[in-house]
Image (cartoon, rainbow, N blue to C red):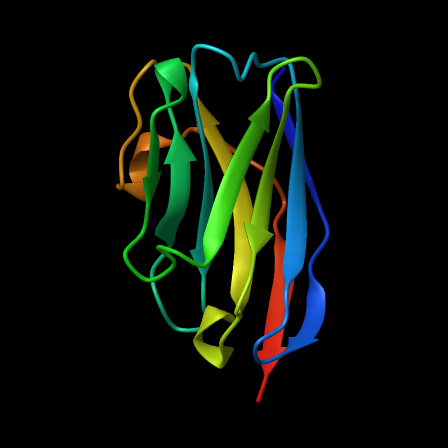
Length: 123
């Protein structure tokens, strides 16, 4: 049984930083696709960043240069370092995964999801 458990999140002021972590079990991050997505109130889920086989990373345009994703194959975890946070980054952040070497920007691609962790950025 695949389980993805997120930690981190909370409230931060504009310009601040936060780090999210996702611990995977029943799923091997190495060689598969694992990602961070987010959903703001009233909006659709969107990919923040994903990492696929051979550690190919793709970032969403809205976070490029501010967020960094890091996968630890030994610990089977996926971290998201978020810097220079903006109010528009406020959302529920989810860790998601698929047993495939390929990733997608389509949230429907991912069958496995964590429960999510809220990030709120105040101005």
